[in-house]
Length: 476
Image (cartoon, rainbow, N blue to C red):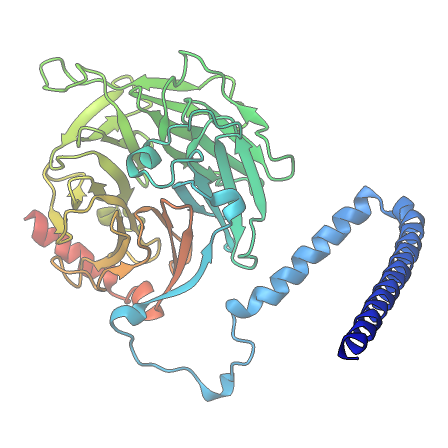
């Protein structure tokens, strides 16, 4: 009898299982039919809408989306809940409080495995930041990042320049390409729509932000101009008459009309006397350049050998006039003091792979006035004067440290302890035009933007006088 009961129970279980499966199949079929009906209705709706979606409407939607994104991220820059009736504090900040990280520009789609080769704030729109990147696959190699060599077998364009906005940190505002890696780039000083860059191939390229992502102009590869990588670029003159200056490792300095890049207006081949001990045998490899404020006939050139040259230009006696000796490694950056005081415009900062930063006077000795030691054996990759504070400057090294110095406060120690921006090497620095923000790029393709405390960023009323007095003491 027990066997009969078990047989009946088993048959009942089988029937229940079959009915359950049939019901599930029926529900699945009903769900599929409902889904098909919804898709058909959506398809019909899209067919009715799509004919009315024109290019202008698509651009309108994209523009509106960008405006909404900017509005949503505005609170990162301004505190919308701030109570101004409570007044502001007058206490001075100290130490690490002097630097406050605002945001980080990084998009793995574009920046992944690319090192930053240049950073430049827009002179027309204070929220825009231009960033040039090395070829893909060079992000973790410092030497390759500094040289900007293209990666073998990469099918994508090696040159990449992104324009970021403080109001839209999640993605770049503009994406610009070139076939050759871009080693130096900047906004046009007198045209808000143009971006110029110097490439690994020796070509100068120009983009128009109103056009496509590809260059609208580029120089031909010719012996009449540069034939090797361009590491130095500057713009001199005024809005009425200006020129683009470029310098390359082929030892040439060229002046261009930014509107017409078919051929340079002037080319100067740098050379030293044959009696001078130079490994290049008279030829010079340029690593960076700087224009002297108020000077139209002089240019500063940094070399791979560690030399700094004062070069006469636009004259019958054009060529190397003076040499400044002091560095024992490649000069990675040169920057002239932006002060309007004539006596201070002769001050020049240089950074080098010999682990030091040095202060020079163009009209005094050919030896450095001050050598700033960083208490480490790390290459110093960049140095930049503050655009508003005549005694304040920043340095960046391969240890990922960002350091602020004030020469009127101390010649031995920085005014802030080294700020660890990144665990990777920093390659480039750029001050915002108002001097309250500092951007630092690293070898992984990330840009870190810092806000600087107002009491440090802005000069005292007698700052220029104090610096002139210090300069007199150092040179007497």
